[in-house]
Length: 357
Image (cartoon, rainbow, N blue to C red; front, top):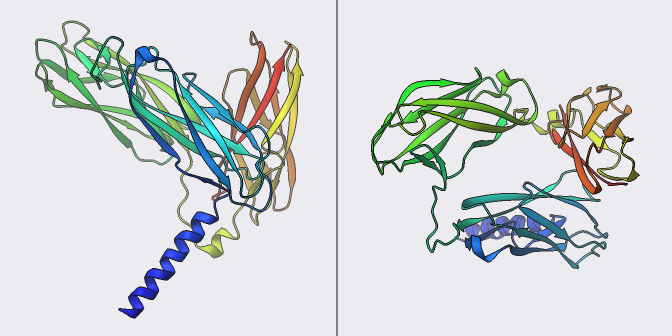
């Protein structure tokens, strides 16, 4: 019994130490708004954090995953032991049903961003009860009008997700077993015949290696049914593709490549309609060759290129970021995601701001 007590004390100590080692110690990293009325307008929550380091930390940027979510944050550096906040304001207008949004937080301390999450259920305007199935496609009703698989690894195997459907019509709807889409996506519907008022599932399977890309990807599938209202059902399929790395032993990890960005956030300043280019230093701090596999801007207005895609141990080079505002005006917040063979941190993000004159 005494040994068991000692072991429990040690484990508790480890857990406490792990909590204390977090640079930003949040009271919670996921917040559920519960049921939100579409008619009542935006709802807001503040994620409060404590600076758990021995130096001031500045929040450089907070990127929302959707235009329906407006972020805010402590603008001044937060001193050690003091508190700051990240604010999320969600607008439910025109978004009935379930929602799940993220805020990506970048600080001046670490290149690895922190992700916060808000979720909840929006009551349709004029409705007193929440409905999970707000998106309509013929007689089918779904929780969302598209299929988002989230993160999919670039492995030669299919990753699958199930999406629930409801037959809101007065007649059975049968899936023909046929669909149109790219070879790296598979579709299955169960049961094949869905009775009126019954629920079923659409299974979407995605092969990341066959797709052969990185980052956020959008595709389309068409599912053939005998639905009298809309027999051929078209859906967007979304996925975010990343490399998969097998777990490494500590001695192998110590020999691996390591990508270090000189800065993770920069200010372009005032930019004219013709655009501007900036450079960021990148260094291989590891002991094997580092390969920058892809650079993805979060907008068609942002492109990036590596001056030297492969860096030897200790070698440095630059990433060129080109911003062309097109028709955009005023303050802009943009990002570039860097994909590399660094097994510790294979996906890193560069954020920048600009004012378009």
